[in-house]
Amino acid sequence: MAKLGKNAQNEQEGKETVEFFKDLDREALNTERFLEKYSKPLGIVFGVLVLGVLGFFGYKQFVVAPKNAEAVKSFLAAQKNLTENKNTEALGGKSAANPGFIGTSNEYSGTSIGQLSAYNAGLLKFKEGKFQEAYDLLDKFSSDNKTLMAMKYGAMADAKSGLNKNDEALSLLDKAATASDDPYTTYFFTRKAGIVALGLKKNADAKKYFSAIDEKYQDYDNGMSDSYIEMTKYY
Image (cartoon, rainbow, N blue to C red; front, top):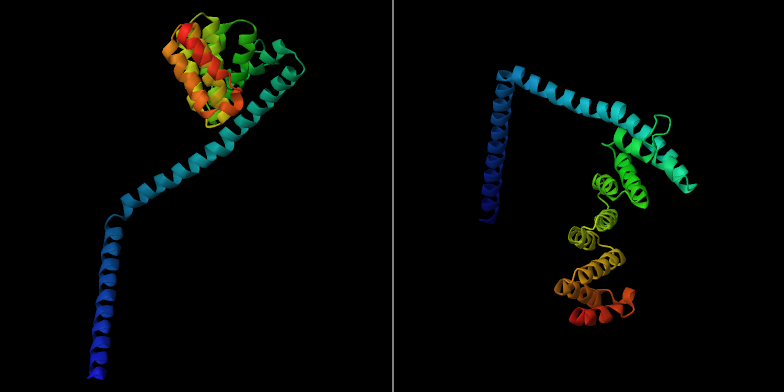
């Protein structure tokens, strides 16, 4: 009986295998008919896709790559002037011969180097006391690097403080304090936000910032947050 059972099982498996391959044949036939019927429109779609891919890589190879190379060259020239304390030359923007950070930012605004140039130009404008120009340049900067974004918001906050817009500065410092995963960066801007809040007599906000430092960043603060928390009660 066991032997007959095994034979029956093998026969059943054989039937299932045959049916499976019949299904595959039907699917293949259906696919073949579909391709035959729609070969022309499919060919057009495929051609468009191929052209799109080739176009993308062509753009990257022959437009973006050379543009990035020129942007880097321009940025490094400005950076060299900055390291030599030639701030005016580093800022540039007055002639094609010396684009500096300003010219590089304007010419290559669509590149990462162009945006970084705007960031550096913003810092130099801040040093000149041109706070609105500094803010506008810094606002052009964007990065996937969270710490750099925190520094951007912090510098923009300084520019707003220079314009006596301290409420806006506080809002930007709050962004700076939450933008980065780096603990020291978070501590630094949280502390700065607390001090600005204290100056604005927003004691509840100030206490929130200094309490956060007391809970999470005591290693960086040397106990100073306790003093600031006390100040929120009486200042």
